[in-house]
Length: 108
Image 1 (cartoon, rainbow, N blue to C red):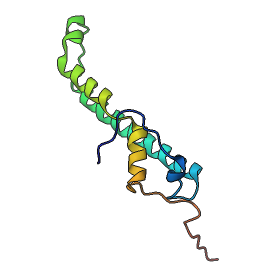
Image 2 (cartoon, rainbow, N blue to C red; image 1 turned 60 degrees about the horizontal axis):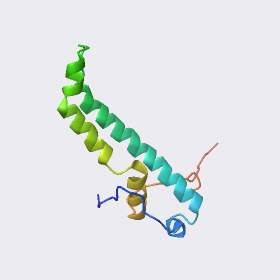
Image 3 (cartoon, one colour; image 1 turned 135 degrees about the horizontal axis):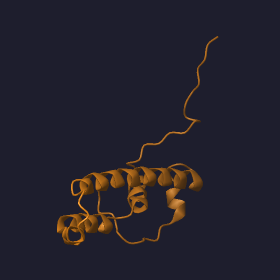
Image 4 (cartoon, rainbow, N blue to C red; image 1 turned 90 degrees about the vertical axis):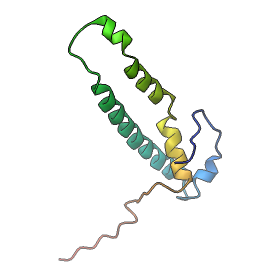
């Protein structure tokens, strides 16, 4: 994936409509992709943090677990899912289809 900016970037909304012909359809596609990315990243983070899960309620261990803190900081510095989804959409890496695209064939 190309370098995704971690901060907010001003975009020309009409450029987003070029792919679909409709700004709202493009934003809907981007939002659905952002949700997919967020779920994937959350699952990935939870699986990595689960390795450090302990059953002991020792406060010293909780505060001194540097590996867990570093993993959390890494995920906090990652670009937001919305930024990643917008970049993927602009680069043409998002596959989408609509109900209008599907041809219904039924025989009686």
